[in-house]
Length: 209
Ligand code: AP5
Image (cartoon, rainbow, N blue to C red; front, side, top):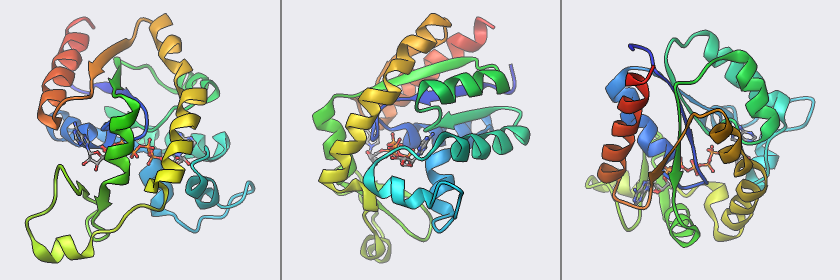
């Protein structure tokens, strides 16, 4: 199977972005991430207002805006890893009409660890690379000096984002279990350990094709 179609789900901070990068490096698929696409178009105006205003409060951006991003990205992608979409049942139903999936991998991490990861995350504005104040700081001093915190990584917004996940996105676990696509991966390990387990799960799913 040369073009896997992988969906990563999990709460904010579970490591979806971190692991997506490894999937892209290993399988050469497209990384489709609604969060990055929305951040790259910071001042986008839509008929629902600016996505940025929803994001800064930790709320979901309206479905038509994100659906449009995903459907355009899927058109160009043979294989992909979807990260940050779908985030509610309406988006999952929409995705179902657009494409099949080979595996849905859930990265499981406890709430306290998620808060720690998100509030400690720092981003290099020049490369978009993510770091962490405790787990993973760049060795280059110039890079260290220019790191920024995402506006939605403050403790107050993080708590709201986790609540939005519990209410809207968590029900997708059952949605994909019902379609026999879901595999749970323990995300509360080092990035290398998570990747080890995730890769095995992906290989298993591809063999079962
Ligand atoms: P989005 O950008 O998608 O953010 P998110 O889902 O909240 O996820 P994050 O990127 O914060 O976390 P992640 O799981 O990728 O973790 P990461 O690998 O970076 O969405 C932002 C906003 O956009 C939403 O709130 C919403 O407003 C809007 N939006 C986006 N998609 C939408 C949609 N479909 N519908 C509606 N609205 C939408 O890791 C986090 C940190 O932990 C990093 O510092 C990293 O270095 C560290 N880390 C990672 N793995 C480990 C590990 N194993 N051990 C220790 N540290 C680790």
